[in-house]
Amino acid sequence: MTTSDWRNSLVWGLRGLSSHVEPARAVRGLTAEAAAAALPRGLHSAHRLLHHIVYWQDLMLAPAAGEKVQWPQGPEDWDCPMAPWGELVGRFEAGLAKAERLAREADLSVRIPEWGPEMTVGGALGVLVTHNSYHIAQLVDVRKAAGHWPPPAAPQSTET
Image (cartoon, rainbow, N blue to C red):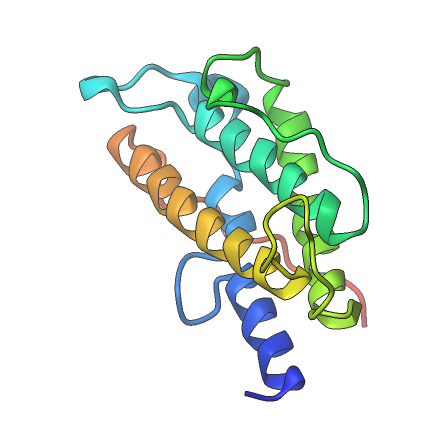
């Protein structure tokens, strides 16, 4: 696989092309109240799922962008206080844009030793794609169970 192919594969995965719902669509049109609604069978709320996605997305992107990270010692993100829904949606979308920039422009072969001796920027972005894909599917299922799917259509651009 060429570097160009790898970059395109990462961008497609980040956008959900040919693999899952486009990530922004998974949260589109969901109110804070609906996102926080309790669900049957111990399912996580949409709010809790997006919190988890953003928590790990931020942690995965920081070392890929050359920033230092304090890795958590356990799964504390499931039990910690959550940011407001609107803030999480904004952070999620900003993180996806950052990930896409890295996928297009970063040296994907740079090692991230804090993450493990073999981890590279490209590998980290691949893990992010997989992690987001898994939990975006859960978020869509939660929305379906709560009767909040499908979301409204994306706003149409008025630019010419």
